[in-house]
Length: 545
Image (cartoon, rainbow, N blue to C red; front, side, top):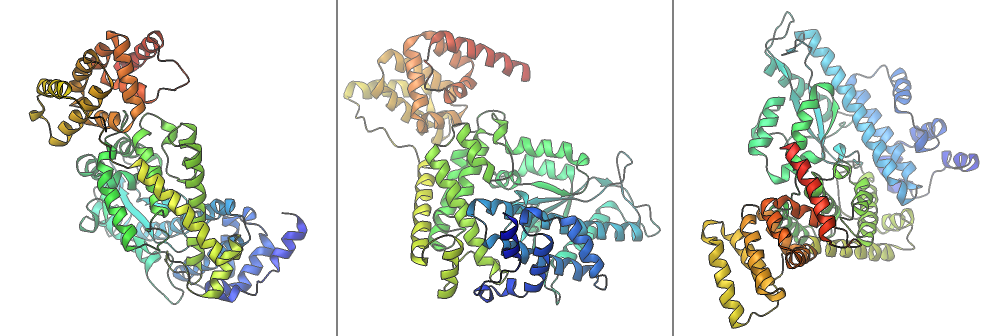
């Protein structure tokens, strides 16, 4: 932005600003901040805090944290009114950095108080142990809403007793630390609160202790962790405490989230989560977050693909949602059209949601009912009218919902009708598999695959394929992959028809199915190429094991 536009921005007060009471109440502070930081890209959080504290030295720590958060959030939101949609990621990043900074200030305040009263707690190495604060959810991804609560988990690696005159055991010391930090952030005063703190994502939820040890967290995730917790911890980020002390813990958390091999079985587990989301679509139809084709749906699509492929493709690991649209496209996990739709819808929905929240600084996900506000929303979002804006949002959400349905649809039964001879052969093949010894769901997948094979291939190929399926009964995720990914099944049948080598090697090394999943269609499925690729992959797998 040139100097003239910056000067205009710094003195700009739109006629409709009173429709946003929260921002309007901080109008004079916003004007002052825009003089110092005309653009969001100019904003210096540390410098601003130093100047603020110097000017507000009469306030206690509760007042300083609250007044700083409210006024700086209002400044960021006001600036975002005039930014294009593509720049909303910058605003979310700065809003998250503001939260990180205020949590860090609260952490240091409490840490100083605790050490002054009770001394320090040491860990097993004799080093001073600290409270580690993990942010999950949108703060974890650095894409925080304006008025969202923050999901935190408290972890420590301390042991023994503190070394102060009023000594406490490690568990009590960190428990008091956590409670004081929540009080400093979440208690409501005349200046409001800093953030609503949600601790329910900790081990065992509200029934578990407020603070847990690193070992306890690792053991919980390994032994008790559920699929939805893989999603929750995928968005985890350490924001306070000793990062070096948590390196080993982060490796264990990462191993819990991402499997070394293609984690296709997750689609089975995700079916239940999908049902919950579909139910929310009905209950919260107009909700920007929970409604059909909403924010949660988009993020669920992205994280599901990360969980499935992240163990093999490390570039797909990571907390932030927005960068994943390009990464998933680059690695051919979504089409160019789908990537564009998901990114565009996510940005539109996130900015619209934030506009709704900043009206009164409330955690809402509903569109405004006021006609004047609707007109302003349309103007800010670049639409000619509210009606056109709703039409655009609805179209994007319908596209998202369609992508969601396609990715998480159940495999369809093959429509080919088997003749009497094929039916007899099918029963023979099923008897060979001895499906009574496997779970019913796995048996159904195997039977479905044999029916498809009989409709597409000759008897000899089907016999070979049955022997391959028999090995895969111990890997039902691969059976699901073959059912859902028709190109993989086609490749398998094609290979079995070419050379018996492929039957032998697939039976011996089922992990090679993943190679077929990653197969690029522009390259011919030649025996020689696959022999080279597979021998190389087998060598790597052997080294790891």
